[in-house]
Image 1 (cartoon, one colour):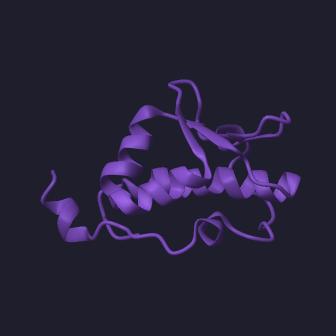
Image 2 (image 1 turned 90 degrees about the vertical axis):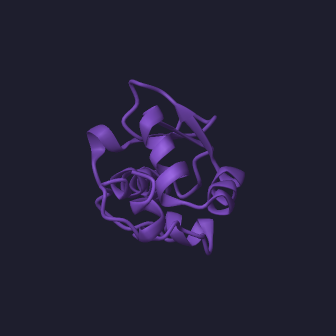
Length: 114
């Protein structure tokens, strides 16, 4: 990840929730509920505008103060990173692979935003 400010934790947890959901249900979640600050970190510090658009074209990011990275779908499937942690097994396709080639903000750009 291109920065050293701790913002990447939000991205790692976000992807872990999606990976956990995929490994548990063999399908993709339709949304991830996460803290509003985590959405801001992903949007403003991790991904470029184009990268964020790519992610949100695949999955909805729902701000929720009480949700520690919960991936879910309309069928009732749910993976809660806050209680389940990192998945015990790798999914057949990772969140990173599913999103495709994303553009990340570089470290210098983040240093100038603080």
